[in-house]
Each structure stands twice: as C-alpha cells, then as structure tokens.
Image (tube, rainbow, N blue to C red):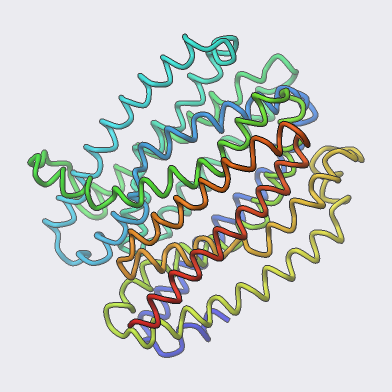
Length: 422
C-alpha cells in the first residue's frame, strides 16, 4: 500500500521513505510491546487509584510539554526539510529552536511550582508532579523535529527503543509494592533525559550541528513561524488532556484510573497510524513544492487507505475488547470493558486529524487550521463539563467522540476548499 502511494516518485526517494516508515514502525512496535509488559504490571502492583494519580500528573505536565514543543515538531520540521542541504541554515534553525525551548522550559517550571504550592489538589503529591516534569526536560533536549526534517528516522528509533527498554527493565526491578508509585515518574524522566542528551551528541558527531547564539530578530522569526501551530496544539490539548483533568476534578483517582486504562488502549491502537503520518509529512512537504497534482492525488490515496484500516481496527478491537482488558488489568473488569466498548468508536476517525492538519499546514493555511481549533475548543467546553457532571466518565467519552468527529469534519472542509483552489 505504501508503494502504491509513492509509485510515481524516484527510486531513491522510495527507499528513503520506506526506510523512514519501517524505522518508525519498529519504534511504534516497541512503544506497544514494552508498555504491554509494564502497563498491566503497574495497574496490578500500585493499583487503579495510584495509576489514576500518575495519569492525572502526566496530563497536567502535558501542558508544559506542549508549551516547550511550541509546534516545532511541525514548523521546525518543515524548515529543516526545506533547508536540509544548507549547513549554516540548519545551525541557525537548531540554535534558534533550542533557545526558545529552553526559555519556555524555565517559564513552565515556574508555573508548575506556583500550581503545586497554591492548589491543594497538587501539593498533596508535590513530588509526583516535580518528578513527572523531568519528561519536559528530556523532550526539550531531544530534537525530534531535526531528525524528522532530514528524514533520518533511524536515530529516533534507536534512541527511543533503548530508552524504553531501560525503563521497562527498571519498572520490574524497582516497583515492588503500592508505595513505590512515586518511582514511576522518576524512571520515566531519567529515560527521557538520557535520550535527549545522547541525541545532541549524535547531532554533533554525525551532522556537525552545534549551538550558536542567534540574534533577537532570528529568534522572533521562528517564534512567529511556530505561533499558529503552537496555539493549535494548545487547543488540541484543551479538548483532550484537559478533559481528563476535568474528570479528576469532578470525580476521583479511581475513576480517572478506569478512564485512563481505556484511553491508553484506544490511543495505543490508534497510534498504529503514527509511523505513516510522521514519515509522510516531510515527504508531502517536498511533493507539494514539486507538483500540486501529485500532492492532491497522494492525499486521496492515503485517506482511502486510512479509512479501510481504521474501520478494520475498530471492528477487530470491539470483538476482542474483553480479552484486551483482561490482558492489561489481569482480570475481568466490567467498568473498563464498558468504557472501552464506547471509546473504540474513536478509532474510525483517529488517523484523519493528523493527516488533514498536516495538509493544511503544508498548504500554508495556518489561519484556517487555527479557526478549526477555535471551533473545536468552543464546542468542547460547552458540552464536556456538563457531560462529566451529569454522566461522569461515560458522558466524557461520548462527548469526546462527538467533538472529535466535528473536529475532523471541519478540517476536511477547509482542506477540501483549499485543494479545490489549487
């Protein structure tokens, strides 16, 4: 299927694209297989309540990951892809992006500290939130956007697999009882930071990319370039991660734990699309600059394949939902099975959010992209809090699916309108 999508491209490009796809597929496979070992183990050892606490802390820190990412995984990736043969330009992009990310990281830590010391919900488990913030540090250090831009995905694969393997082994060595729950964010953060440091060493040794201080004008340019994508990521977070936080504020850690288990299963299955989406993004950037006709044709082919796969995954997952939950929790858990049965409907539209969003960005329709996010967040905040208040986790899942369908529909509308203009 991948070959069908790229059958009109050059042989060298085919090999590079397939290499990147398989590298990210291996990475995604590791992302599934290794958590399949630790996920059930953690649920059984620390219990649903503490698992819910860790999920709540992760959701909270995700805000700061998005702030420090600033949309560079798209905007900087695009810049790197365009200027991949210009060494000085690559150094400028790298240095500017890293400067911005470090400044945002310090601001984020300051904001987290205020939250922890002001609100009782956070200060009761202050260390958990501080330890979880280590993942932000690791993410800042890891220039994922650079490797994606030059289409050298193998480095991403190697680094992440090593990190996750170390984390997996550490979980079984150090997490022995319920009171060890605080070690989970410590081990996770250590893995993130080590990968980040080593990735910078690779940049220096393999690509001779070093940091240089840039002018304020240059820094401002890259801030401006990533602004609309940054806002869109904030908006995405407002109708995804924020929903879990609202659930935690309205209910308790146990319910958050049940919801998180179902959510992680659905997102893990939906994540099967990520290698293709990430691999195709820089490739589509180049194709759009070479031939609009080929770009449009590839979008149709990719969307058609995604539709067939998403329906198939939904059907298969629904059929085996009880077995999946038993594998994860080690027991027949009717609460999680009930939530999962509804949540799996989300898989039908799962891959199209990323595909259509990337397409709008490639076509330089950032304002339309932001407009879609505005509508989505508005609808989300009109119905989600009410749904949680009256129907708890079931209301959240149903409303979340409804909002995502609207989100994808709006993206498709603006994308279709733009492609018709080309």
